[in-house]
Image (cartoon, rainbow, N blue to C red; front, side, top):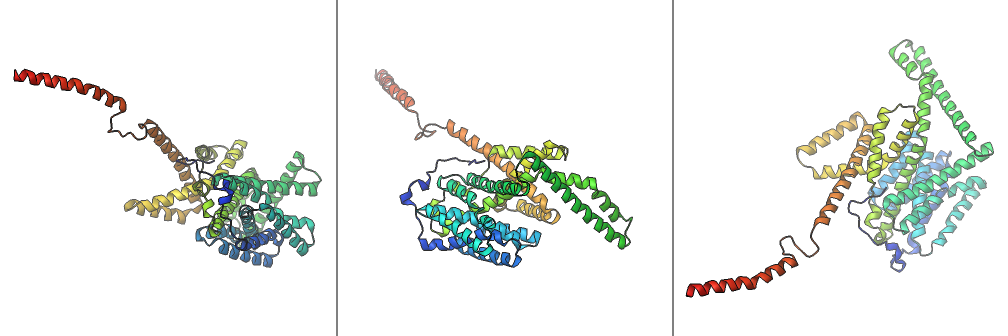
Length: 442
């Protein structure tokens, strides 16, 4: 998924270990405390007061560790959105705990001359959790960010691009998700098999449909008590939320469930990698950040796939398998292209002046007022076009460079073989001139 417009080989700064500006141990103490609190955050789920305290503590720790407003706002905002949507700090502390645990774990693995010393931290977090809960299985939730931290640290020290580092982190988070699912199925059903998985999700779909049907019945009952039976609102609710429509809707949601999980992991992975970059700057390790490690890019293939699936989801039957596959690809690629589209829009807004800038401002305000969700689709679409146009421009520049003369030769200069030809002609020209002068004298 990586592509740079002008791809240059940049030496990996982590190869020269004797030149790495490792911070002092004292400077890493706040990172250690943040990691421990983040690791403990899953055991606070369900206890709203403890979740609130842990959430505030993580926010304060991240602000102190980063001290970079742009990254701080991005990380905290990503964790506050579920709080606002679900009305629970348990969701917020879970998101913030995963981001802080993954990012701080990767920082500690890479910012210490002896990474093996960090092994004691997960053990300490597990011990603290066991002392609080007395449940060894529940205490293992403190280890859920380990795979992502290890892979993010690996991507960092091997000099991978930012997009690759994010993909590594996504892989670590998906490993954790799969491990938790396997444990759940083994504990609940005694085994993991295709029939067990299919039966479980069929039961879950029926359960969700049942909840929605009961909600519809309560709403219809409320409208009946208010004397609105037979009204347009009553009829619309009864029609739109019929059992058949609800079954179709729930089936569509479950079809795109893999993409939703990957999108969530993508957001968490991106914020974790951003936290790593910001922490390096605070610790005096900015030298370890290369242009490739901080620039987020996507490949031309991903942009083309997005545009294709964008149109396919509009024409294919909504409940078909082909539509489900297209929707999954479309959703997975959307977050990254939104970032690129947002960056390109900000750049255009800064560089555009006069009337076009006013028109662009009015258009953005109109979209924000009318339909915010459409703005995300437009940003992703614009991001895909930006990637494709940038790739075409880079290829054209590459061809122009190939057609240029060798280094050190300007277009106005004569080539060596041309100079030799001219030099060889000079004696004959002088001889002809001398003969003409002799003739004149005679």
